[in-house]
Amino acid sequence: MTLRALFDLLSGQPTLLFLLLSAVPTGAFLVNLWSGHTAESIWQWRYVYAALVYLACLPGVFALTLNVYLFLFERQSIWDMNLAVQLLPILTMVATLMMIRRKIPFSYIPGFGKLSGFLTLIAAIMGILWFVDRTRIYAVTYIPFVYILVGFIGLLLLIRFAWSRLF
Image 1 (cartoon, helix red, strand yellow):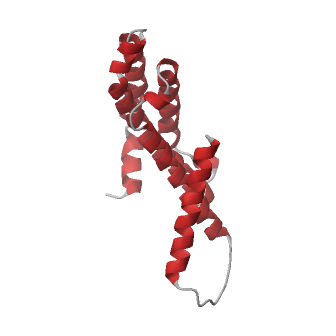
Image 2 (spheres, rainbow, N blue to C red):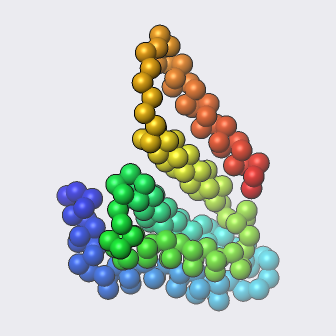
Image 3 (cartoon, one colour):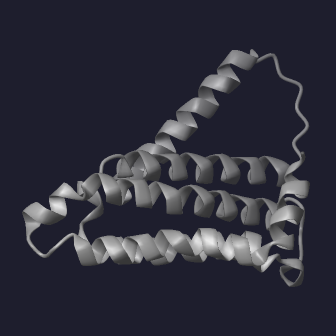
């Protein structure tokens, strides 16, 4: 099964996809109701919040990365955008994060820093790949490939450091 076949299958069942993706913000809403109002009762639900964040963010980040790829590399028109597969996971992610943010700070959710690091890495790699795709540099060099690889990793670390300083 290819990724295109999976998207075609999901697009053929938009109601099922909508129900699956809307279950996550609905779960966040219900957990917000059940978790209480005291700091101790909210703290006990932090792992449930972490699971909800990951359930919302993994499809959302994948859809966001897919959109960036399709629009920058494949030059897909916005008119050809599949709303169920390309937009609904992003809306689910935003709605879930907004609901969770009202109840508990993201710094208290276990593993949220790892998720932002993952998103930073994806953004940095997509930016570098887009830059490489757009430039036409022809060079004959005697620089070993290891130095180029070390430079690439250094650039990723620099982007990660700058991102952590920014936020």
